Image 1 (cartoon, rainbow, N blue to C red):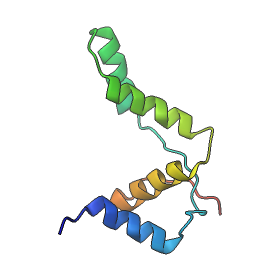
Image 2: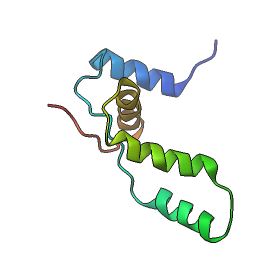
Image 3: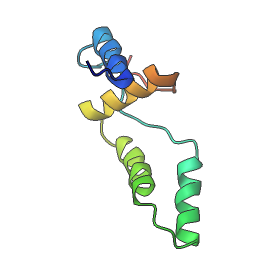
Image 4: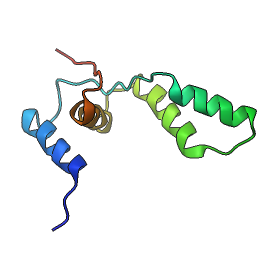
Length: 87
């Protein structure tokens, strides 16, 4: 049997609220991603995954989609990351 801690965290979040209506799909950034992307640009280094991740954080601030709420729920379950709630 294959287990996944992230799937277990998702299960906990869905048990609390199947549609995750209490969450907003807003993902905050603390600055490390921005710094890393700027360093990559300044050193002409390729960092497409990190860059796209940073851009997705910015996009999450405009919409409140179900996938973004799942991401917010996982971040909250994973380590108590700050999330925005609808309540």
